[in-house]
Amino acid sequence: MMPAGNEPDLESGTRWGVFGAVLAPVLVAVGVLGVLLANGALALSFVAQSGSMDLATSGLTGTGFGVVVADVPTTGGHTPTARIGVGAGRIDGLCLAEHTDVLGQPLTLLLTGGDADPASYEIAVDGLLLDLSSVSGVLNAGGQVQLNKSAADVVVNAPGLALDGAANRFGLQASTVQLRNVRATVRDIVIPHLLDVPGFHIQVLAGSHGCP
Image (cartoon, rainbow, N blue to C red; front, side, top):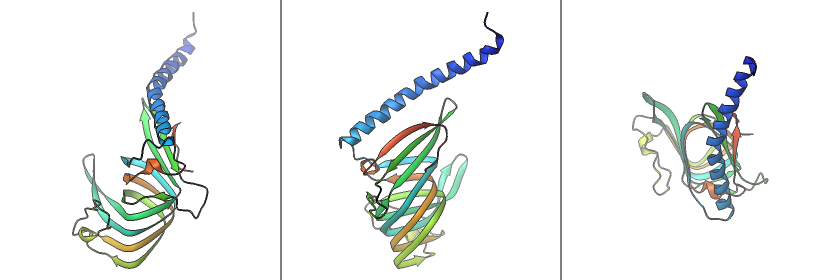
């Protein structure tokens, strides 16, 4: 007869077995996606709406920059967020860490892209749009800068890209922008053609991991 003390081990083994069975299709899908990307078969926009994604980049430069305070829907109401738009921009290296759970087990979907050259700004992000719940970094805005502009009037000069700010909210608009050493927590993000950037890589990691 098996000692009673071994029963929790059996339960744990069963739980991880089910977890592996659920995770396997995810890993296969990620692998297929990677092959398609390597062969140039995909050039898609990346859209996420999670509220729990970490973003890190060493630099962003662009034109047509706008920031507004906007409300995003949450469970039971709305919460204010900083919404940023860039009409035409380029990024120097990028990391996105999406946190999720499968059967109660934490997982991280880690997306990275870029090269090793700190001065190349190799990732095109024309039409970048993101909502941030927190952000740190260095911001330099240039050209014609309009501070405390009505959020309803802030535009970023990108076809089809609207910040949808309200008339009674804060807004900032600038002709050019440079951001350095950016780390942020993202609620919503739209990056056109992220899946076609140089050095694009996807990993599924057990546990909760942030960007390096």
